[in-house]
Length: 161
Image (cartoon, rainbow, N blue to C red; front, side, top):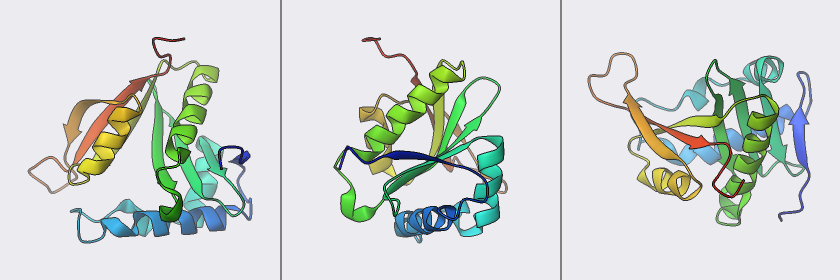
């Protein structure tokens, strides 16, 4: 499983359609658990094309079994839409994707990764903490008077580097 080739997609890549399908399948369990609903419901193939132009879209496997979107921000590399096929969870694919994100952050001159996860998804908080992320803040979606997401960050270079 770990020897799957990592693929960086380009705008117009036909493989972005199965990447979008993977995101939709992988995020479906959140329906009814998170409020407001996931932005995944509004995500389109055109959005992924745009993410290829303004950042990077990566996947593992063909068809893809894991994927992520990396977006350069002024002070960090943002890791979004990290998805792993539900049948392959627990096999290190998220860790491998985060490893790629760390490599890309270093190559782009960043010293940290950032992501957001919904407050309700406590199991995701634990997974990201095990992968080196720490909570750095909370945000509320527009129209909400309570936190709806937590922000987590990880240093790109760990103590061993």
